[in-house]
Length: 212
Image (cartoon, rainbow, N blue to C red):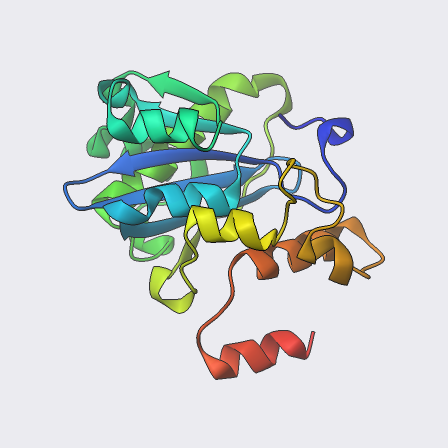
């Protein structure tokens, strides 16, 4: 999933891991082609919308959810590939140890305020990347912790109908993003893509974006 030739110009190439609690979930996302990693904690009902936003190439999910409505919705409605992992991959204590060892830190506070599901999401994705990319392991920075309440929530159906980043047949050409993308570098194009995917709610932050 990291070969540059497989990427559409200007679009991210995400691998995500979903860690679920009772009424919420955390989703860690990694783009190995640009060495970006982030995590967001959201209400359980927002999982499909967030997956629709990220449009990942591969999704990691605990085996115990294989027959769940969530897995069915991801596979049937979003047509995304799920790689089911043994449940122990998401054990909080194990994931915390993985994070501490990967970043060579003594405490999770060096990263920020991670929820328990956030720890599971980040730890599980780091373990997966470490196992699958042994020969070409990227130097990932500490994960960026995103605040769900700072972004506009757009449901999967609305996102699809508005053709924000993709048209109905799945292509990028003809979408809103393709029409406004006048960036001159791939990095700039991907940044714009991320901005279009996640509209801000705070006017100060919005104006700061416009100054870039």
